[in-house]
Length: 161
Image (cartoon, rainbow, N blue to C red; front, side, top):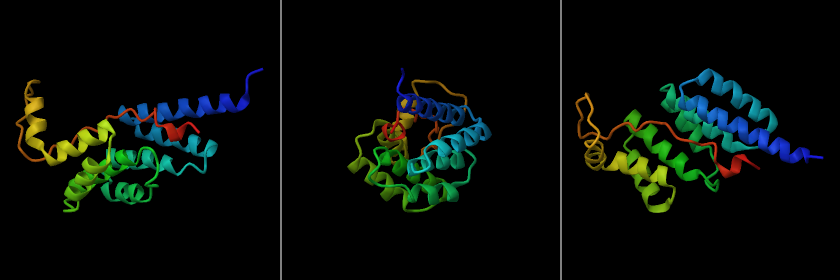
């Protein structure tokens, strides 16, 4: 007989993967519905708020996203991504604190995607130089680029518990 707790864990992990995929593919209403289902199964997992913030960011609701990100537990394994997303939101809203937040990510994080996001915000020239190898029709500036929010969050360890 299969252990039902293992089945539920795998099921929740699969739903989290679907939430991530839905957000990545701009299926935000679907992502919210799936997130609601995951919250029913894991009501005490505060880190699910990360997905709520990601959805808010995709919709351009920066203030809501910042409020949600600030409420996340700084001891969570993926706090670096939340902090990088916070810097992104601060930049998008013109909050001067974005630079300090991004610097903090660089100083304290080992998470590759969080570091890339912080570096792109802090050093847009380097990001532009890397992107120049990929021709684009748009006119690039030296302002920090708004990095794409396409991240696979389905592998977050704290979501699997």
